[in-house]
Amino acid sequence: MKKLNKKGFTLIELIVVIAILAVLALLLVPQITGYIQASKDSVGAANARSCYSNLLLQKATTDANLTGVKVEDIAGCTWVSDTDPTQGAKWTGNGKTYTYDPTKASQAPGV
Image (cartoon, rainbow, N blue to C red; front, side, top):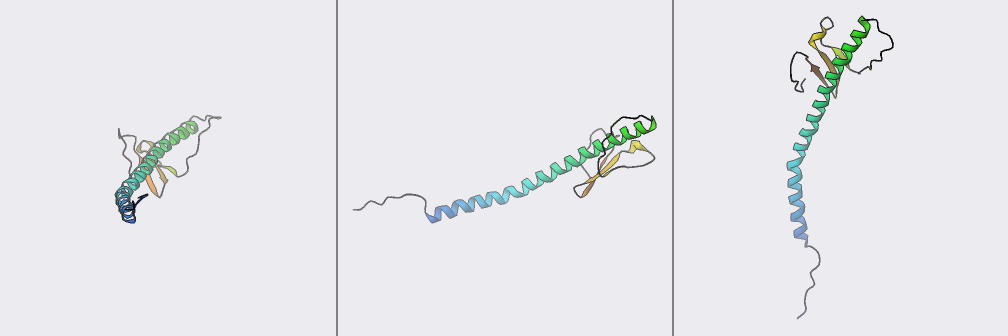
């Protein structure tokens, strides 16, 4: 009798493995996109906090007539209220507007 030398995988085995990997990918893709959006929201909230600090520094240097103090400009950065700086700042980026309220102890990313 002639012995068969079996090397490699059969077509059925390869199709089964590919199907299992496809199902796993379908389960993971929504999870990964959720993490990406959460990270963008965290960056937006951090930029809103930085925006508020920057605006306070700009106001302090202007009110005290200080010269030579370099204050970086953050694009998309505005006060929540032009008359009351304690209400916080807004930063617009990533197609959303993030606000920072200094009266709240913990800030959650939000619109």
